[in-house]
Amino acid sequence: MSKMQINITVNGKKQELLAEPRELLIHVLRERLGVTGPHVGCDTSHCGACTVDMDGKSVKACTVFAAQANGADITTIEGLGGPDGLHVLQQMFKEHHGLQCGFCTPGMITRAYRLLQEIPNPSEEEVRFGMAGNLCRCTGYQNIVKAILAAAAELNAAKEAAQ
Image 1 (tube, rainbow, N blue to C red):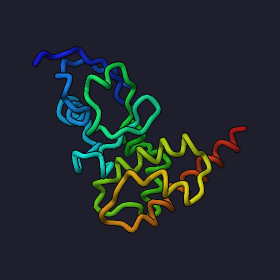
Image 2: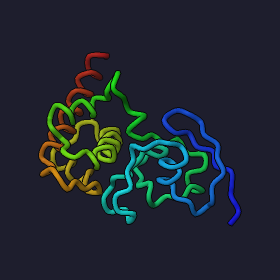
Image 3: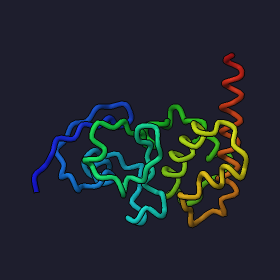
Image 4: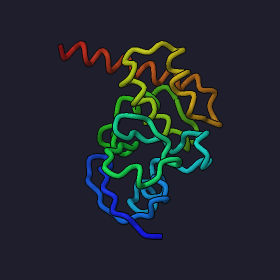
């Protein structure tokens, strides 16, 4: 099969590569670009471990072809923060014990990031509904919800203080 030129921006860095049009974005990210935050969990889009932010929308990278991502701006967990400066969502997941094994956490946080862009001050019900496409096999979701609500409160307080 012939390869095509793919141009994507991942976590602010422009990337150019040749890929088969049927190659999945999750494999391009993990195997070709070394961006290993998004995980391959189910290969069927049910679990959400591969969730990334693509052009302002949450997508499951196991269902997006590389060709579909051509020209896209993609943010993964690595683009949200790191050990020297955690994103508020990462900090709240840590403080509120919103993770156990951590396998689903990158997808959870990346989805929560977009959810808080869409609904800056969500109710508990809106968080639960908005996160329904991301599964966790270890927690009871309660601390994940608490972490997202706490992050929303922090972000809103910072926004108000800046005004």
